[in-house]
Image 1 (cartoon, rainbow, N blue to C red):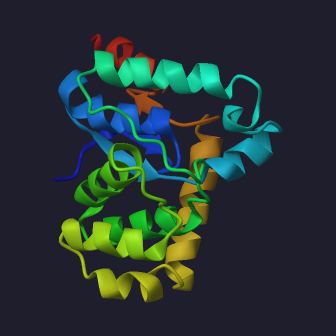
Image 2 (image 1 turned 180 degrees about the vertical axis):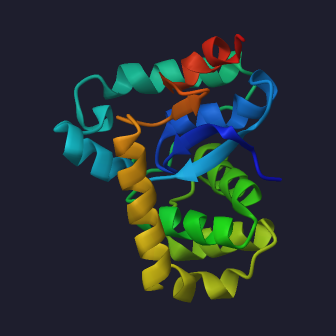
Length: 191
């Protein structure tokens, strides 16, 4: 089911904070937002700084995310050995899933695989299984993510997100206001 077009939640499948936001958005916000796949790596390049996952605060942030997941009633996190994964293929697959009208179930399946089972979302066989789980043709995924139109849609979405003020994920834009972080959903829910 498509979300509220006046409320857009930008995400990257490599982001555990985006996982928390996507998992909670429909329950916290008055209307579920439209999900928008973007490449957070490109956002990092444009803003001139990278992910905290490659810094000394990594362990602190991992503990914080695990505590938030528990507080939110989500399953305990199982961190993939390769995290943070190169999520380019996963984000192209999400773009394809949106084109097929199956974005929400695909995103849910990928986040379960990644953060509930500890699977590597850079692995195309994991993505194909997630596609099958979401009602897509998993065998078609490899060819779909190589299509120039899919690549261009993802690039364009990422550029549009940057131009709209997105500087990381998750970012929710609701009624023209930019909310950065999964912990901002409650604030965004206030009329």
